[in-house]
Amino acid sequence: MPCPAPFPMHQFQYREGILHCEDINLQLLAEEHGTPLYVYSANTFRDRYQRLDAALTGLDHHIAYAVKANSNLSVLSLLAGMGSGFDIVSGGELFRVIKAGGNPKLCSFAGVGKTAEEIRFALQHEIHCFNIESVAELDFINAVAGEQGTAAPIAVRINPNVDAKTHKYISTGKAENKFGIDFEAAREVYQRASGLPHIQVRGLQMHIGSQLTSVGPFVEAVERVVPLASDLKAEFNIEFFSIGGGIGIVYESALASGSPHWWEQHDDPPLSPDVYARELVPLLKPLGLTILLEPGRYMSGNAGALLTTCLYEKKGRAKTFKVVDAGMNDLIRPALYEGHHEIVPVREAASRETVTADVVGPICESGDFFCQDRELADFGARDVIALMSAGAYSFTMASNYNSRPMPAEILVDGSEARVVRSRQSWDDLIAPEL
Image (cartoon, rainbow, N blue to C red):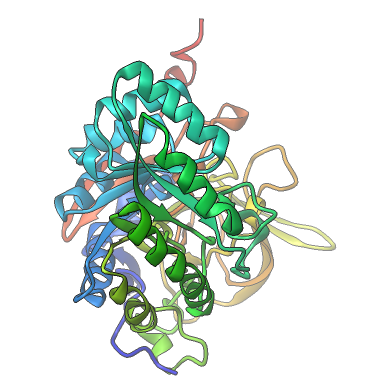
């Protein structure tokens, strides 16, 4: 069924045969700054935040962007300026939020392995809460807070044992996953937490996984956990219920159809904020708790593209390879998650033929590919191509493998394109080494 309201995927579109990000010509941008090059759309970030916020009107809620998806300081500053809080998983991410002008009191600290140094840093900045992933961690945070002479605000992350039906590496809500505390043990853990001298019980948290493209698993998890949240409110006076993130995005490009709203006639449209809210708000509103949401990919995934230049075409008896100057060190999702990214030429050609090929990088690994045996619009040496929907879990997972410098990052806002991370030089690669 069609989405109830227009829901544009991103602001990357062809204009006069050239791919643009908002008002910026990406061919010219690649020529000026070189490739590989990450490009982000500021207005896509704004649009995603505003749509989710508006869809939840009438529900006491707060959005906390998951920093791990895209942690560039300018991106964090943009979202902080809109009132966003932040979901963090390390002391370094909290440091980034503070440097970007974000409010640490709106930060929730998740993750199964917080160190004493990170806990102390978070306590010093009075974060909103720690998400507790185990009894051992609860006791550890109580001890560190005691050394600091304070009380640590916490929410217990419970595991509702709901199958999100997503990739096994990004499923987090099942009993066999490393995250969270068994649903059946939740009350016992809250009872223990309430008796610890340096713990302040503040909320309840869950997160069942990432890249969910239907609302069903969210509904199943919320229906299961709402009675527990109600009981915890009555017994321990919790203030909030965090339902995590996980709203999926579309990795198929709208560029081929020429319409940013192509899924309005699509048999299987993406999960829109309106559908998400329509199903969940009636379940959550009666609780009378503040509802926290922790979107990451939903906010940033479609907001970015990775530009790369074709170096050569290698034809063999079995395959055709398009060798580009970006590698798995720049974008590891296809190798790690079997992630799909639409691949399009920056220069559009109405008569461009198609070819079945592998698009591969220069890294000395057979896993260094962006697609395999895919039918693509043909392109050749020196052509710039775009790997779409690369705004989430892309640059943040990049590395210097094979001693390759990290790409530059550009933030586009209307007709302005600003370098928000400089490209590393070879000197930068070895600067920290002795």
